[in-house]
Length: 504
Image 1: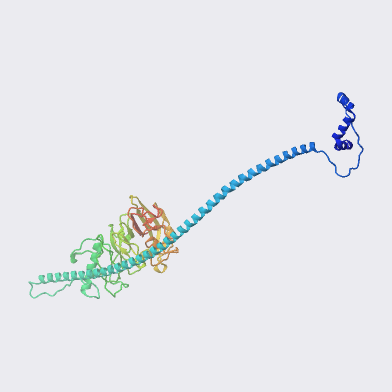
Image 2: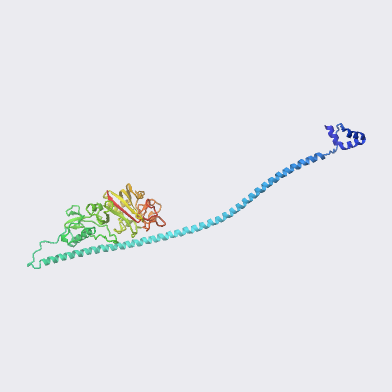
């Protein structure tokens, strides 16, 4: 194999040419007979340059390389197309990122603008809150001044009533003396008087005793008793217990001055903290004491709704209260009433401690009076409510009492029953809170937000001393209406509310 290759390499064409020239006959014979010749050349050591014809092999190699290059070029073109597609996608993403950055910059500018605006609004609202507090303080000061003027007016009215009673007593005494003079006018000599006007066992003068009798009759007349009759024909006062003047525990120091109980609509509530002694409500040598509570009034036969004078046990206080004798078997002492919004219930601690309002309208009986009333017996509480559509519901608790002022008139409630829902038990065992005495569990003052005084917690499920809004649903910055959360919710102000207590 090696010899043949070398022979071909060395002179394939030249050898054949010489061969054909030397042996032309043989070539023709070869062509005729298709003979072939093989020359065996001995292997030689080659020195120097060797020329080899690579024409045929180079062409084959070039074809394969071109094919490979074309394949590689096609592959690279595919990769280039892929890279171009990725580049286009990345360019779109870069455009989107640029747009997002631009939008983010505008959003940051808008947020900064909104933050600045919000900061201005917060500062403005703070200024408004400060102004509102100043207005509220001014309103409280004006209200306090009005109440002081009202108290002064009531004191003057009280003195005027006392003077009127004294004048009436003196007129009666003068009339009686004139009758005695006329009776003895035609007799000679004048007989000695053996009878005197009915005396009162008292260490004071006659005018004071007569004054006490007249005022006792006025109180009973306002409580629904019969009209006044001449003094000689009057019967014992109905519903008032007569005690003998020989009672060992009867005080004997000062005289009692009272006034008629107001029963006309729109009349302001009279002061009801009065000192009681044995000279009050005296008649025919006896001592008349008012009723202990409205159930006592009902038991004595008085079945008419109205204002009655009450004297709680174990205290020297006299107070006026509205007795409800027709609803729920009667005997209820009304301690709070809301029906027309004529009275402002956004009051101070001292005002809630005492009383305010109109006994025949909107009024509050007073925490101190409630304490003494609930101390003398075991009471139950009923809350009667009516909405603006005329629906009436109630909530009743089988126990109700207050702790003394030293414990901030803390509320003690029993078990609930009724059809209004229980919105009061959440306030059980809570102290009373007003604008000037914050005793609730909230970080702020619930009375400031609820616009009233109540046994607030955090803050309220019921707010029966709030603002009386007309029409039911109301709009306010806070839930400050007269509401019962289980009945229409906190954004509905009730039409009427009545709190009543009764001994069980």
